[in-house]
Amino acid sequence: MNQIIKNIDEYKKISEKLLGNRDAIKVPHVIALVGDLGSGKTTFTKSIAKAIGVTQEIISPTFIIHREYLIPNSKSYLHHLDLYRLDHEFELDEIGIKNLMKNQNVIVIEWADKFRKYVDLFTKINDTKITWIEMEYIDEGTRRLII
Amino acid sequence: MDRNGIYRRRNKETYYMKILAIDTSCDDTSVAISENLNIHANVSWSKLKTHNDFGGVVPSEAKRQHKEFLDPVIAEALNVAHLEINDIDTVAVTYGPGLAIALEAGIDKAKEICKTHNKKLIGVNHMIGHIYSSLARDEEGKAYSGIDDFEFPLLALTISGGHTDLYLMSGHMQFERIGGTLDDAVGEAFDKVGRMLGLGFPAGYKLESLAKSGNSSTYDFPRPMHNTNDYNWSFSGLKTAVLYQIKKIQNEYKGNPIKDDFRMKDESNNLDEETINNLAASFQEAALESLIIKLRKAISQYNPKMLIIGGGVIANQALREKLVALCENSKTPLFYPVPRWLCTDNASMIAVAANFYAKNNMYIKDIDTLDRVPGLEIS
Image 1: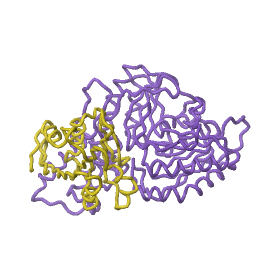
Image 2: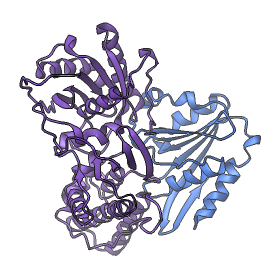
Image 3: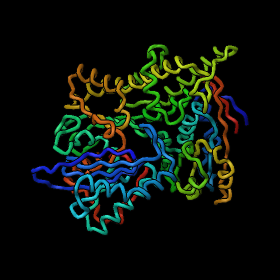
Image 4: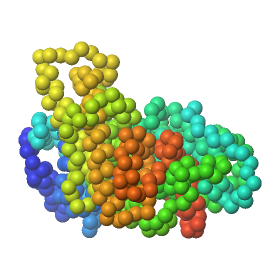
């Protein structure tokens, strides 16, 4: 799917389509985001949080690399990671990323393409589902999403 | 070695509590020794960081550094304070917020010392440390920020690479969060805009120095959320506005390539030096003005006895000037830690805050239960 985004409502539609039906989801789901600064990763993550019922404010995880939010009425979490600061695959082990692939967790990973092969291997843990989303800046107010 | 050694002089006052404080929340391995609020030693080691940026962690290297250097840094701090481990009453350690595996290194060491030498343990919130850094005193008891104690109610703003939060304090250790960033922290916005300008990452400190040579009214960047009826900020939107402007300038450049610049080696953005300086200055003006707009609103709403600022971004000179003007106009006393080492991450502020944890009897009863909380908030 190749979609041009002109306003925030369209992020909402995509998020709901991807994750809206929580009851149908039985496995962890990784949303791997690829895109430069200003391509809309934060805005999109906020819409994902809304779609799964997380009401807390989603603030940038860049500084501490990983933030987590309990998904209401469940035992699952929204994990929000930013891999920008990491340089080596073993650092992903050190931050315990594999342990997040459980329950019906939603794991949003910014800059996931830095470790594309490694992230793809998550499908082997608990049947984790992975959706790669490429985000691209087109112009003021316009972004392209390739899912 | 990046060391801020403060040399202790024997002093005739009665000492109440000697604290050894450890902070490993980020890329500094920092240890301080205090007696009450007087800092007798503050030793920080960082081989990872070259500038006073607002955040730059490579997790595995940070962990390795902390593990390797905690012992020598502790030994040096005791040496500077002319004390031995037996003289210490209490160990204080940062347990969050910060990088999980970096925090762990400090916590493990603190537990080890407490068990081996039978000391009490206090777990300190790093951001409470930043707020209390204004109460740090030198070895002779002179406050670095000029105040002896807080007066309540007060407003406390924490601004760093990971935080932008505004608190109303009704008493010591009594916090009510009244606002904060909805996306990026202000220091993070400096770092990310710095990267867009081709200054590397993180580049907050470099951006500030370039802004001095730029004209801050060249570009009219937005002050996101300045009209909202709350005390929240959004710095991600401002970052995006800078991106739009860079793309616009680049489009105007097309067919007119700019000569190579030394700063473009890593991330070429084809901007000339004057443009970069003007973008840096205009961005800084918008970011700082955003902070001031909401602070002004909060001061008029809450009428605080004082405004306290903590965190690495308060090292920014332009911000200090704006804050002084704001507080003169509103007749609100303003305090922040003056020396740069006390603004950025350090263990002295953890030692100072630990005094107030101790007064509230907030010791860790079962030492083994203290665990790192990377996303710790003030509540």
